[in-house]
Amino acid sequence: MLEPLTGHSGSVCCVAFSPNSSLIASASEDRTIRVYNARTGQTMLGPLEGHTNDLNWVAFSSDSTRLYSCSSDGTVRVWNMQDLDSSNPPSSVPLALKPINSIRYSPSGARAVSGSSDGSVHVWDVRTGALVLGPLSGHDQSVLSVDYSPSDQYIISGSGDGTLRIWDANTGKDIHGPIQAHNNAVNCVRFSPDSSAVVSGSYDGTVQIWDVATGQHVMRLLQVHSRIRSVGFSPDGHKVVCGLSRGEMDVLDRHTGNAVFEPITGHSGYIHSVEFSPDGKRLVSGSDDRTVRTWDAQTGKQLVIFGSNVASHSHAATSVGFSPNGLFVVSGSGDRTVCIWDAQNGNLILGPLRGHTNDVKCVEFSPDGSHIVSCSDDATIRFWDATSCARAIEASTVTNAGMCWSHSYLMYLSTSLTSSAQLPERVKVQV
Image 1 (cartoon, one colour):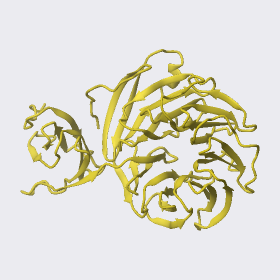
Image 2 (cartoon, helix red, strand yellow):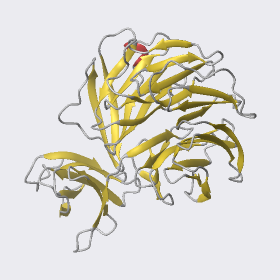
Image 3 (tube, rainbow, N blue to C red):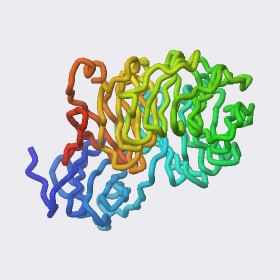
Image 4 (cartoon, helix red, strand yellow):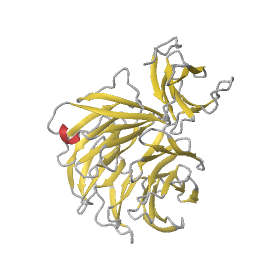
């Protein structure tokens, strides 16, 4: 049993063990970091200075060679832990936090890829929050959409610079790019279920299909006088759904570009997000009109408006998605919340989940349905435990655990989820 570890002059808000169990790092409101020998309690480094406001979190990289710290000064700093015997304290590199526009799980659920407003792509370890690949650079403007191929081999990114890039998901190598895909921002990209093709949608009003193996253009599916904000393949890969800025959705034959039926109407605002259900029988959409809705994918008939006939959120529903079993729908909003809904009747199951301090840009269920990931303009990525969804149908209040990491720091949080769940003032950090 070690004696108390001392040295900070302010409250300690976060502690973290290194993955090799040899070090303990602490972050304090005194704006410093200290690193201790986990076996003896001896101070190895510190106080490490550089942040200009309160420290919030610290976390080690997966190989214990780097320490990441996050502060209310708006930066993440990376500290080199490889030379603890040096008389010179480790230097740090400040990383300004940039809004995160898109995030997608890998097929296994072990990793997640994110696209940021600084034009970079990052790949993260979901369990630890450690950076696995990146920043992958090449885009000249914001990365607006990313996706993992179902084969787990590739990552696709679409940017405000009008280009696509296809990356090796294991090495980060830029395989094809820049692909000059559109004459305006590429808002949305998705792989086909067999990983052979990519569909992209743009502000230029076109939806295009691309060959993954060669990076070559295959065909133009759609050209309209409306911005394309969201696209997605049907589970069988034969159809593509498109969400338009004029409040309509088109379902197209992937091979011919022909409309399967007349445009789907009902929303009164910009369609931000649209997706097929896992069985391909339904569609879910989120709109600027603040509603989340489901539709019959065979006929285009509206099925359910989630929450009420007035609004599902108090601001635009920016991102939506089905759970892998098709029983639930997750939505993120400009009101900074995440909600989980019963896909059959539109009733709210969990939420609103609060924690983001700016617009939620993207939400997705993990491949096994156990968690939800969300990213935001507040430059954070948050994970929410969704395993209590089924239990919540029969309970008015449940205790739900989630985790959040922003760039390379991690925290676990617990909150009692009611109709207006709030984050606790202090969170316990666990590694």
